[in-house]
Amino acid sequence: MNSEFSGSLENEVVELRNRVLRIEDALRRRGVVLEETKPRPVAEVASVAQAPNASVASGSAAPVPVAAYAASAPPQVVGVAKPKDGRSLENKIGSQWFNRIGILALLIAAAWFLKFAVDNHWIGPLGRVLIGLVAGSGLIAWSEQFRTKGYAVFSYSLKAVGSGVLYLSLWAAFSLFHLMPAGVAFALMILVTAFNGLMAWVQDAELLALYSIVGGLSTPLLLSTGENHEVALFSYLLLMALAVLVLVVLRPWSRLLFASFTGTVLIMVGWWIEDYTSSAFATTAFFVFCFFMIFAFAPRLVRVKNEKTSGIHGWDALALVVLPVANASLGFLAFYALLDRAETQGAGPWLAVVFAAFYLLLLRLPAQGRLRASPVVLESLHLAAAVVFLTIAIPLKAQGRWLTVGWLVEGAALLWVSGRTKSLLLRVLSVGCLVLGLGALLAVNPSASLTPVFNSRFGSYFVAIAAFAFSTWIAMKAMAEEAQKASKSWRAIAIGASLLVNALILLAVGLEIDNFWRVQQASAEWSQQLELHKMYEQFSDSAWLMLFGAILLAVGFWRRSAFLRWQGLVLLAFSVAKVFLFDMSELSQGYRILSFLGLGALLLAVSFVYQRDWLNLRAKTQEKQEGQSA
Image (cartoon, rainbow, N blue to C red; front, side):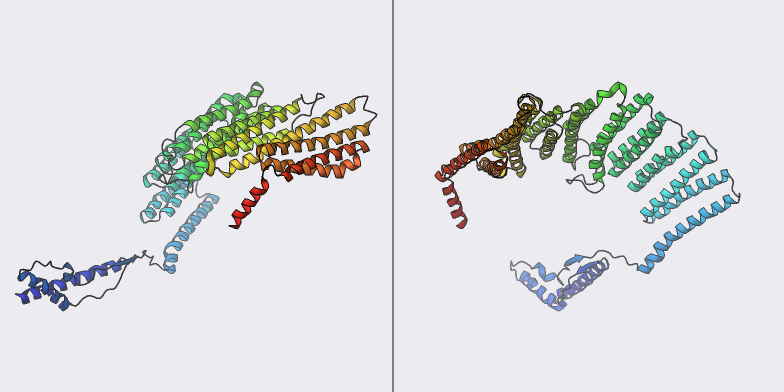
């Protein structure tokens, strides 16, 4: 009984071993690397197998070990090797490169033969057109053979060449030989474009769709007769844009949208330069509005390649970043140029406000459709566009001090909104508006009038001081709310705005002091005492520097702010340099005494406060040093 069992088991083990060897051989042919293991001898397996049989025969309840029936350990997969291209360089050169060069050589030979035949009048106009149509159709049909063999890119290139030959043949039939009217040639070219679009859709070929768009946009250029057909031209471009919009909604072909936008803009600019007149205002404005709206909403509908990931990748950046910026800029310029006429001279600022309102409305719309990869990017771009157009509206409408006031108020308001919405982009834009306002204040602000303090220049400085003080308060409030998570940008804004507040106060009052003495100098009483007037002005400037430095020190002591105290110390140091370097030589004996007396008394008072250590600064410094040493 045992011998019969042992014999049958040996046969089964041999059969299993052969099967495993066949499986391993098949895996190796597929590129799977297997770890070599030594198979156990058949006799050993058979002897191990007898033990469980004996235990069963004796009525023992011991379990049968399954591992005893394994002829060898199962093969372990170490790694999967990528299938290598077995073709050598010689094979690639012979099968691919020579093939493509040969195709190109045949095309060149055919072109030269046709030119030779035309030059010798072997082929008439109709024959030339027919040969072109047949050659183009043949190239398109021939390209399908390459596509079925796996040469997709080369197949699309052949289709592009064939389509180009068809376009040129139809153009020659219309423009050179006058064999067909413009309407027939136009319809046939649209048919070629539609065929390419259909092939691109069926074969899921973005490159072929791109070729189709290029051909479609070239059609009105090829059939142009120099006449102005605005409605027909822009209607055709509008249909092209809508067709592309449908494609990018259904397929992840985002770069087609940018190609359509670029071609449409170039054609419209060329038409504008050649044919636009003020009589076409309404029609042109309608088409510009339609194109602007299509390309404004298209980035919200476009289907990107990586919908489940965050961020923008590759060509999607053209449709999601570059196109919105270009569409907003060119759209505003187009409408501004349309409104640059006698009847609508003052519409520029309101146009900028309308654009800002449109992008704010666009910002409020939820990200629908295919846009899941980067809604934050579009929202940021829309917000930036709204702020930029509001900023542009101010210089278009306001001048002088109102330009300054407008930018400063806008910057402060945007910073307040930034604090409420936690928007870093809005924070950056608000700082930009404040910088523009500051530049306008220093560069284009009008000079003061004869009335001191109560004049337009001091009023502009007052608005600037209030705007930067408000900005300081917003930044400090945001830092307090965020506590440990406060960003460095808020701290930078708080420091910069507070410094500008003090600098503008110093500058504004100093300018009014100079203006006061300038007004006095113009009077008859002072006209004969110019030297005395200069001393008064010099002394007043020094006194104001020392007084403002003392005020900053006092407020710094009161508020326990080292930041303010350091500003006061810097001003006092500047006052010391001015008194010793300038006042000593410019002022008379009496004013020189007053300058040094005031400076000395102020410096002694400050020194006394620091020596008494009323703010306990020494203890704090000692604790800090002990903490660092520990």
